[in-house]
Image 1 (cartoon, rainbow, N blue to C red):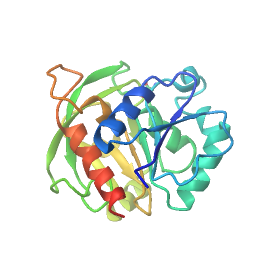
Image 2: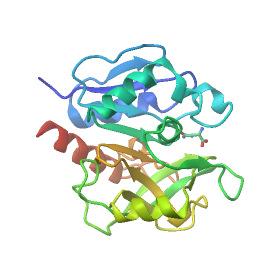
Image 3: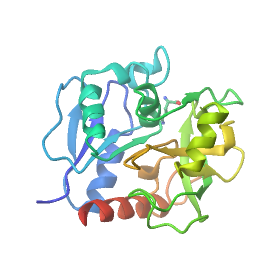
Image 4: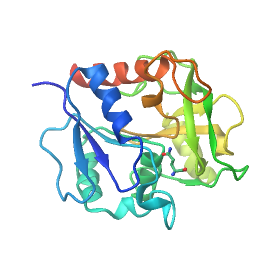
Length: 229
Ligand SMILES: NC(=O)CC[C@H](N)C(=O)O
């Protein structure tokens, strides 16, 4: 049985197709598209991806309404059973709003939309998402968001760092995130929320906010870990 990834689309998602293309190019298997109004997930998913975009127009708070959508109940149940979940950008916001990851993504400190490729330090190399990178390695992945300013209180941040759950950190000043956190893992390491967009860096095009090889490496690592599990 081939690799089965599901990509959820909410009204206002705009990176769902890119996510599906990235998963398809790297895995060689079709991604399964899932509409937000569905109450259940397709069977036997190896990965659930919550893509970037502006779900429900970012009304109320980015990700807040998507976190209450019918499909999220099923995503939360699946995550609690250990099904891997990747949330990118708006998907990260949905994961925090849904309580699958701690903290919140607030308005960028400089009050502007930031759209550029940033250096990231890989902090954790033990997870299914990060195992193929070197600890402390710098990779380059694009960001594109206005609400990427990660906040959690000191006790939560200390716990996340102590448990190795800070997966990625910005390597330069970006959006005001506490401790420069760009990606956070769940306690079981099978849910990752990250603001940078690996699906925008799967081809070696040269553009300030698009392209590069490191997103492809990210998906190769992830799919490799899941396919061999
Ligand atoms: N690219 C995205 O997913 C953007 C997420 C969200 N709408 C924001 O701007 O913060």
